[in-house]
Length: 97
Length: 382
Image (tube, rainbow over all chains, first blue to last red; front, side):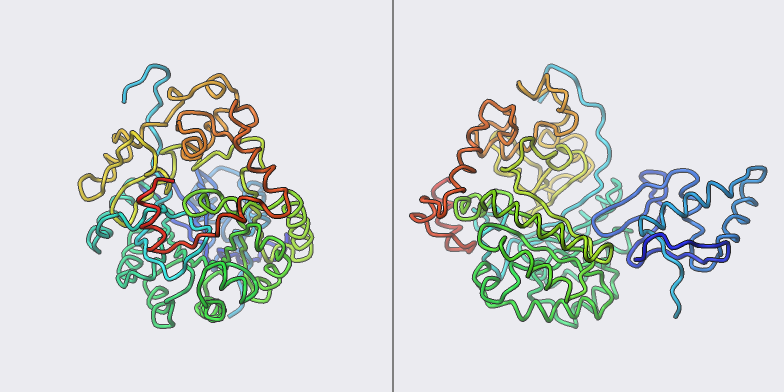
């Protein structure tokens, strides 16, 4: 888990090892589960996290969100969120292999 | 159970389900938090009972699931429960001493979708580990730690600290590092169950605690993010009580091996409360409607100084079980709190612990958790 190494539009993120992202029917929201803990990801944070799949680049995530939520400038929010959760160690750049 | 005062708003859903699937255990740890009279309790739940509990817990919204005990590996149907837990969408954790964790079993857990394993160590050296758990298990644990890595589980090590091993924190952390542990919990003993019986022998001195924290902080600086180290101080040394269970019936739901549903794993000792059994009731009723789970929700049950204290929303008056064990009344302020008129009940024990060898410890031998001692203690209430 390296600290906040800078990332670019071409970075592909995946969830940290042993983290699980899922929809919680009882709470009507997305959550992130990990050893001994859980974070609720309401609204846009859930929408961004949903797209961190080890395939989409950061640019791809932004484009996908722009299509889903047209007419909003989301780039700043997305970059800010990714920086935050990357710093927390919840996501990591996709590992080779 | 209707009481005057503010009526608690409808509680949120449970997030954490602790399944104490058995009280059987091959270890005999002196600090075990299991009830001292565990040999008195009835039949263990069946596999079907547990599967029903898991389903109902998930319907209520629980996400974290702990398989605990005793030693949960003593149940040979654990694989079935693990598999069902994953299907239901739990994030599941096996809390184990590692004894009985063969390669065959860990492979089945992986296949079934168990998310992580918390392995307990008693100390970093074979002699102390084996003495404190009254078994010969240290090398076996080392083997299990390797298996955990081999099956790509995060390595979560737990070591319960007390007077006899707290001076080995440096070695414990080095052992953890050598095992590539990702999370290390250095949890000081909290004084419940067997640990309460052995309190005089186990409570460390203030100096010991201070040194252990210094060592831990230094270690943290060196290893950085690769190993997350949690250090939990014994609450006897605090001036404010812990927010026990994050509030009574707020997040945690424990089901014991004999089917009792509890707001915390110690609650069955509280007098005057009856807790429902999952054989007779569904978890929804238990969580929202049973008198036991509503007994200490909100603050209408509180006495002074808690009732008018601004911190009551933060710590909920501390631990009901500790209040009962130390003061004889579960509705009293947890005496760990410096504002409690009975705080001296804690400070006297702490003062006693500063002596080189606690005089009481000399007269009272350390008591290992085993069936014989449990039966003896069941006859004479502690």
